[in-house]
Image (cartoon, rainbow, N blue to C red; front, side, top):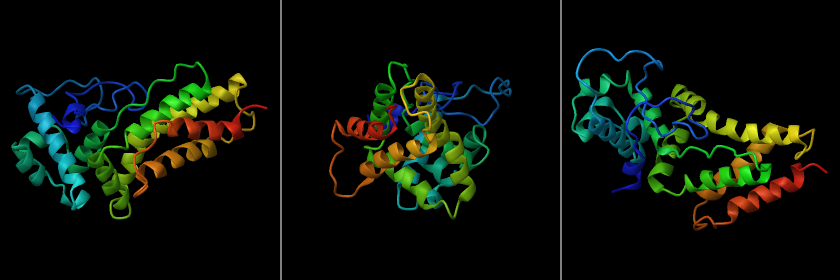
Amino acid sequence: MSQTRERLPAQVAAGSPGAGGSEGSVSSGRPAGAARPPGRPRSERADKAIVEATVDLLAEEGGVAGVSIEAVAARAGVGKTTIYRRWPNKEALIIDALAALKEPFPAPVGASVREDLIAIAQAFVSNKTDKKRLDCYWSIMGGAERYPELMARFTREVIEPRRDVIRTVLRRGVTAGELRPDLDVETALWLIMGALAQRARAFGAGPVPDDFAARVVDALMTGIAAR
């Protein structure tokens, strides 16, 4: 069974797509707590097939342009009505498919800023080692100018909750006296995420070393730790 299939979740789950939440969950576009409309129960198998078909199409050469409700329905072996009962449009479907691919960041345990950042950094790197995932992410990033609303929603619903996990750790470190009181949290956030993302995507650089996440965090801590 493929890694992608194993990560595809069953159904709607409540919680943030950031740390320890339901980032891997497939949502329905319906507000949390709202009653399900009458009709036949939703099929978990159909949900998985639809999301997996979306991921496959997004990872292919056509990218976002190659994803349509018709194409997803054909590949998933379901009717278009089945998809529209779950998602109002292809943009909502793509967002849920991308969220399903992302491992949630580990919830900060609060032992130390360094330990929490290393755990988060390791999760970030491991999420970037699967080619299909990378191809999907690049499809969104590469199509940002053509699909600005999709990119904005991807950032808001999938990326920002993960960034908030790091912000929380950094701010807690400032409050606890572990980090410099004048720390620029946003700059520190971009330093760690930028270094990890660029190394994971570097062409021809080979696999990311097991200790790379820790080395990045330690290099960052040299500049941001309290003196």
